[in-house]
Image (cartoon, rainbow, N blue to C red; front, side):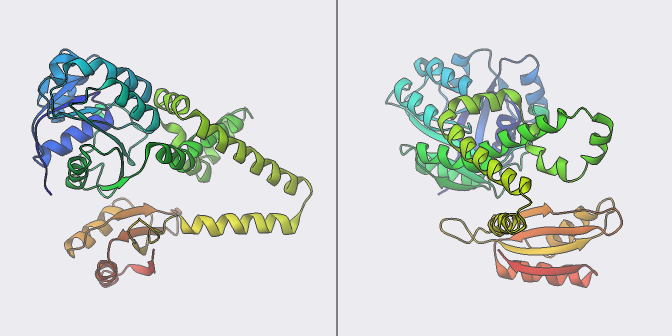
Length: 364
């Protein structure tokens, strides 16, 4: 099923809303995209970047006669917007959001929206630590999971997600919030706590120099929008608190092992964690599609990643995932390149080996 919309309203034209608008226009999935944002200057910038085709001066103007309304605002603002747009929606309109929590949004939508419109909750599992429409990326959703909740209008929303290049995954709102709390919300809160703990040592100069390696990678997610993450914690409070309690218990357990110099206990702890972590990139179980990984050993030099991806592209192979695992100044490091088929992985390996790169193949 292909899908296209006549008029689309995007409420909140930041990085995600702007990326969505740009992607839909580039792929000709919408004839017109009307943007509304309360921040000064955002809409003019969105127009110049090609994220919207027209500005709206009010919510009513934005959503009136829209085929699709996208609420691309933080969670608490989205809860309020659902009530505010309700009187102005046209029958048959599909309403969606991009919030990282779904249960509260789904409940508010059921309470506020007229029965003549459809609501499908949305959560694109892609993004950036950068904020604002200037950080938009029309390819932001390529090969990313796009989580959906709801029933009425689901087929149209799934079709839109696929047209954006993303992978739709349907979950119940409560289940969504439980799972995302574990794989997204807890890591973010833990990263911010780690940053705060280290910052409290007040050894700024030395710490900042050394933090350019593993610490920087481990705490990257702590760069996310404070306002957005405040809303996420408030709207998914129970799930996050439950997981924080488990994390505290695990930290206390590790502390006891370290304090007691428990050699065997520490070894078991690290081995168990390593074994589970090695499974994380695997997407071959259950509902997730299998990824075929190719590890490419590259030198640390400008443009090397672009060279690798360019060679693979010229070979006619589409890359599904790419990740720089480690880079050393003298030796370089491995680049993980993921493909949706074993044939694609093998073809890419042949292309890169012909050009002198050392590669290793690994399924999953």
